[in-house]
Structures are given as structure tokens and as C-alpha cells.
Length: 77
Image (cartoon, rainbow, N blue to C red):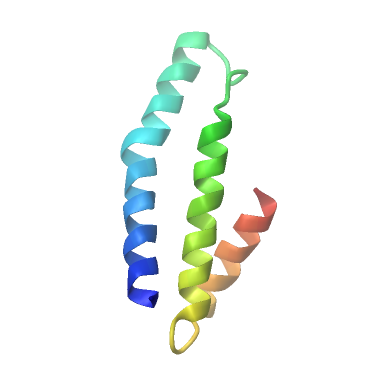
């Protein structure tokens, strides 16, 4: 299961970088402000934090360098 969490986390992170962020940047550019910030982008980022945190805590041995910041990021978002 841990291997699949890593693969899912990697795919989601790449998707966010290739699709999510440029789309939001273009939207901000067109509007001239960040007023229309996408809620779905925040949901997607929270999901990515959750998957990476789950990966870090289920890994043997636990990966504290990945787990702590991703868990904090999940709760902040």
C-alpha cells in the first residue's frame, strides 16, 4: 500500500504543477487580481498534503522529514 501512496502522491503533485498552478496563474492574470482564487485548487492541494503525509507515516521506517511538514501543511490548509 505504501508504494501506491507514493505513486499517487507523485502523480497528484505533477498534475498540480502542470495543470493546476498554470491555470490559476492565467486566471489571476486575466482578472488582474487574486480575487477569483479557485477553491478546487485548495481542495486538490489539501488532498496532496494528505496523501504525502499518509505515505510518510506508513513507510517503514517512518519518514519524519516528509511526514512532519506534510502533516502540518494538511492541517494548515
